[in-house]
Every structure is written in C-alpha cells, then in structure tokens.
Image: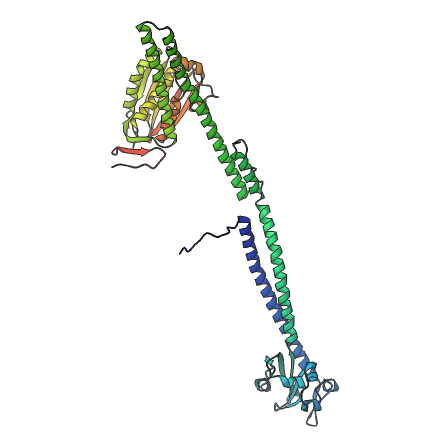
Length: 503
C-alpha cells in the first residue's frame, strides 16, 4: 500500500495560497474570538460580583440593632418576598420569577429572613462558617433541581464593632449565560462571513499577485513560436518576479545568441561544403566533354584530389567542433614538452612558409612541460602558424617563442602581416569568420575554422588566448596554458565531462 498517493484533484498555486491564507486567518480569527469571549465572560462576571457586593453593602447599611432585636429600614423590608410572612410560606412560581435572592442570618448563623427564590438554592454551610470567621464568601451555586446557577455573596453586618447579622445576596446567572451564548453565536456567524470574504479577497489578491507571471507566460508562449527577439516584461518592484523575468531574459538572450550562431554556422558550413563539390563537379564535367589525352585526365584527377582533400579537411574540422560542442571528444592527458612540440611543428611549417615567401624564426624555446593532448596541441600550433603565414605578405616573417612563468606556459606567435582592425578582433575566433575572405581563399583555401579550433583546444586545456594587433603592423597571438605540476601516468579525460584518471 502506498503511503503517499497523487491527489485526485491537484490544486493550483492560487487556490493553494487561498486555502493557506484562509486557514491562517481562520486560526487568527478563532484565537481573537476566544480571547474576546473569555475577556467578556470575565468582565461580566466581575461586574456581577461588584454589583452583589454593592447590594450587600446597601442592605447592611439598612440593618440595625434595637433592644436586642435586629431591625431594618423600610427600603429593605419592602423587598418582594422579604417580609416575615413570606419567609414562612411555600415558594410559588411568582416568587421565583421575582428573582430576588436575599437571606439574613443572625449572629449564630440562623436564618430569620429569606426570600422565596433563595430557598431554591443549594447553598453550602461554608458560606456561613467562613463568613462568621470574618472572611467574605463568594461562589457559584446551583438550584436544588440543578437547572439554574446563581452567584452568591455573603458578608457580616457589624455595628459598633459587634457582629449582629450575616447578609447573603445573589443573582441567577441565566441571563448572563444567555448573553454569552448570544455573543458566541454572533461571533460564529461573523467569523463565517469574514472567512468567506477573506477567502474571496485572498483569491483576488493571489490573482493580482500572479498577474506579472501571467504576462511572463504570454510572452514566453509567443517566444516559443520562434520570435527570440522578444523579451519578457520586467516588473519595477525588485522582488522574486523581477529576478525571474531578468533570468528569463538572460536565458532568452543566450538562446538567441546560440541559435543565431548555429544558423550562421549551418549556412557557412553549407556554403563551404558546396564550393569544393561544385569545383569537383565542374572539373569532371569539363573533362568528360573535352579531355582527350592522358595528361589532361591526370590534371583533372589532381584537381579533384586537391578539392577532395580540402573537403576532407573541412569535414574533419566540422566533426571535431561538433563533437567538442557535445562534449564527446576525449583528450589524452599526458606530459608534453611544449618547446619541443612547437619546434617540430615549426619545422613542418617551413615548407608552407617558403611557398608564401615567409620566414619562421624560433626566438625563444624555453623548456616547458604542460599536461595535455599532444595531437590537439600540435593542431593548435599548426593552425596558428598557418594563419600567421597566410596573413603575412611576401618577404615577411613569423616569430615563434615558448616561455613560462611560475604557473603558466606561454606560446607567442608574432607575424609581420596585414594586421587586424579593432572591429574584427572580437570575432576572429568565430567559426567561418574571415577578415579578408578574398585574400584567404586565393592564398590557400582556408575554411575559416582554424582559429575556432584553436580557441576550442585552448579552452579544453583550461587555458586562455588573446590577440594583439594593429592594421599594417602585424598580429601577435598569445596562448597561456597551465604548467604540469608533476608527471603522472597517462590519463584520459572526456571534454565537458568528469575527469577520470587511469592509474
């Protein structure tokens, strides 16, 4: 049996907030009503006790002793049912309805005047004994049949310092209880009405509070249809909705940048792939129509082979970048002597430099060891040298140096080429971006992916790359990579994933 099951009717956020607000308000209202009821009950009970004490003092003031007999003034003697005859007669319904509770007792505690209604009460003997001891007595008693309650107050009557009598006065509490019951009913009805209006108000306030979120939803739906130029409205109040809107706008802007770059990448890749295919197609078409000798067919095959080689390099570069973006390219992590690697790559690039009438100088090759993928590092240095050679004029030079600091290895490749305008510097590492497309294509057919692969390789090795350039004065590419702290056993790491060391 499942302990937790999905509710049959899941509640929305607004309804949940409404229920929570209503529950909290109901608890507060209950506590306030209970406090009010208790305070009213205490206040009415205190007022009743005060009234009984005042009545007892008033009656005590009307009692006096004359010739050894207890006498009373007419104001007390005229109380309904308080005469001597009424004290001795049976209780009638009219006497009870008079609701006058008074009893006089002599100094020995023997009653000599009692109203008929008082005789219906079950008064304990402690009301007399405690009073005779000089302490007023006050308590709630019931009638003999237990149907009604009455509040009784008892005190002594002293004249000239001598006890002459005891007076006991009381009042039925039925009217007081009826009043409290009426107040409880009014509080209950009022509470229900207030809770109903508070629930409606809470739902309305929750709807108003979620209005900015509804605006975000509407805008997000329109953005979902493909218009990434829109932005969600940002509320003026710096609350959670404000920060949510800012976060969504940042996410949309990031997605817009990624999608724009992806669309541009696909378009450029299609264009670059179409060019060698078109060259191969036109070359073979011409050969099929006009070539007649073996030398002409060999020339055609050489051209086709060159374009196929260029197409293969382009496809490999695209595959490398695509796998790098997906985090599926594995880099071998092993100690690499960067100075020796750079020297070997420069030696291989000498042939290309000679074809462009450019000289490569090794200014400084300081012994430097880094942890990295040797193949990728070779490709990185080769692409930088190739880029420097292509952008250098005939008779120019490229200077290669490898140095190090306490924590970093520094590769510097400086050329004396045409330089790069400041407006192009932020974009040179973008895929298929060319500062001078016509010159590059004529110079060697670069696809515009070399620097993009360099940037990806540097980032994959936790390094940085920067460019210093002035138009007409050449450019300097500076790559910094973290030095190898020690030379561990060769390990393999998944770029974009968790590094795993194989010992």
